[in-house]
Image (tube, rainbow over all chains, first blue to last red):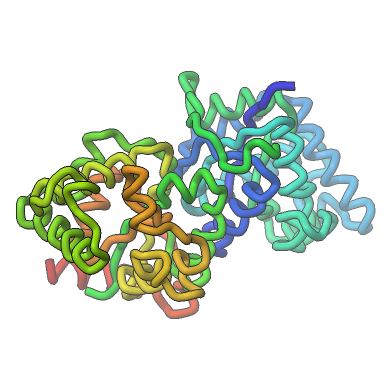
Amino acid sequence: MLAENTLVILKPDTLYRGLVGVAFQRLEQVGLKMVACKMMYPDMAILDKMYNIDNTEWVDMLGVKTLETFEKFSIDPIKQTGTADPHELGVSIIKHLKEYMQMGPLIATVWEGIEAVFAARKVRGSTTPITADIGSMIGDFSHLSQMSTTAKGKAIQNLMHTSATSEEAKDEIEIWFGKDFTPMNYERTDEIFF
Amino acid sequence: MTYQKSLVIIKHDGVSRGIIGEIIQRFERIGLKLCAMKLVEATEEMGEKHYPTSKEWLETVGNRTLDEYKEKGIDPIKRMGTDNALEIGKIIKQWNVEYLTAGPVLAMVFEGPDAIKLIRKHVGSTVPALAAPGTIRGDYSFDNADLANDLGRPFYNLIHASGNPEEAEFEINLWFSKDEIFDNYSPVSHKAMGYSGKFASKIKKTTEKKS
């Protein structure tokens, strides 16, 4: 298998909390190679593509997941959010996600490695902090859940985004770095071991 | 004004060794605010501009090397092909430019009270063998000028950091455009000191008035 690229975004809370170095170190120490990096404020055009509201399947899935959490903790979704409709709920989650991504500057990066998508995902940990594994970035640096965040009317602040699949990585790298993206070409001194 | 910005470059030896994160952590831990960051391949032209070109500076660099050679009993003509301070200065500048353009580097701007001094302190002495343990160079580098010069390159020391406010301003403008700098946020470390919200804008205004 050839090396692939994956998108990693250090979201604004990582910068506010001064955890940029920690995040990079964890990616570097598993042998992933940074091939692009820029600090930026994302504009709405980028966020609209990243969190595509027309992808109804995905929007509904976000809503369904949240409803499941509510059910688990016997919370009335209508009392909490004003709706029990998964799509409507999904739409409001996306709104919060975009607000979160514009809370401050963020850092968009691309990392290279064989199975880089899976590797970066593992370093990051699973999306919901409270259930993310200890030893993962999200597990070690947050404890939030849908409960705590929905109660505050905000998105889950989970420090880091990583592409979920190789196809998603290609699309997302294009969204954040443009069609003509060319990764930096250099050798890591320890590359022979990875 | 002591609330200032400084340019930091993790040079290619730092990038290729995969220790970017460890270096950035040092500055974040102090509390400094990251205002700009990009992975970039510096052009020859950028490298040329980054180091001074004045005859005076080149001669200073050349003379420093000649002094060192004298102390160590090294023949400058054998090593550098010349014993002229200006010519040696030019060779060393060329080496430095080659080092800076050897591959992708991570350029950054950090901001905070006494940022320039703090960063320099944590970077440590230019010469790895003299850099104190606990500094970045002391903890992560071991290169030696004589060995490096024999290989026709300067010694590698991982990182560049601005030396004074004038240098910082020049270097930040050289490496970053205005729209690549994001200083309009307050990390938690700044909040703890009250360097946020209204106070942050007060600091900015004082800086503008003075300049």
